[in-house]
Image 1 (cartoon, rainbow, N blue to C red):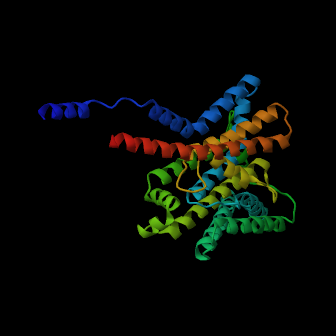
Image 2 (image 1 turned 180 degrees about the vertical axis):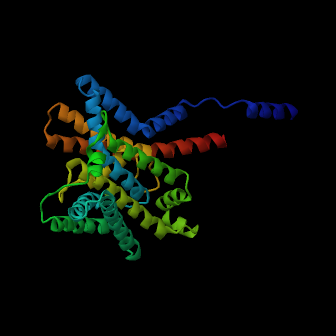
Image 3 (image 1 turned 60 degrees about the horizontal axis):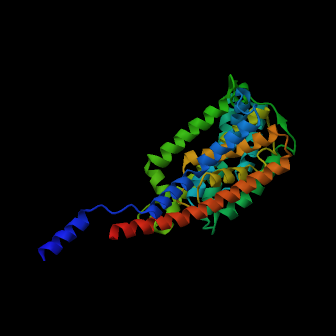
Length: 348
């Protein structure tokens, strides 16, 4: 009996043999989680090998400038998608905010008032989306933001009488189109908003509430989290991000355009999905959303450098989005296998 007990103790003390299948699952999961960054790195490597112009400072500055609005909209869209929502109105908000800013500048030559008008327009659209969705008990924000996409675009076209309204304060022009050497000022705007987004989603209680609401709204409600206020806040912040995108766009073209931001809502959604966020909610981070935005920017820049037709650019981005969605499905499957394998190892 004593010998049997000793043998059992030795067996328990002996470390479990490494399971190659478990290690393979862990490696696969790590690769899938790092997928967005790996895709961007491979893309940059391939483009740099096929065209020497890509890594010139001027071209890198162009990539940053062309990607700035997508990145700004993507940061706002990230918060909405994490909460299990979607915001289809951000492209129209870019247009309306720029038009409102241009109209204000026609009457008052004040940089501060123009900036406040542009940002205030974005906030107003976001607040309207959030309140209608929450207070109106609409089944899904897709319906609300699809309606506001048309309403806001129509307002922009009506206010501008369907034409470009030229003129923006010098400060707005510098912010949207100026640069320090080859590095555009819009890069610093994106970086600043990204830092604020990281702080909000990582270090504030609001960030924990956001992921809880996106993960399981009913459980969050039972836990005492103000789900309605959280949902309204993410649409307000998405509208603000679109307003900042409108500010950058207006400065870049020195005008308010009622057609600005056309299809930008699709770019912002694509950036977030390429970055690994899930439409089911509760998952996504700022870094990967930026990676997704720059992936779109690099694809477009590479195709432009190779003189590829713009139609193929749309197709290429669509293919990347489909690959990202399929990668998310595979990632979910691998995560389940890893959890099961880990539980079996603990029980052994």
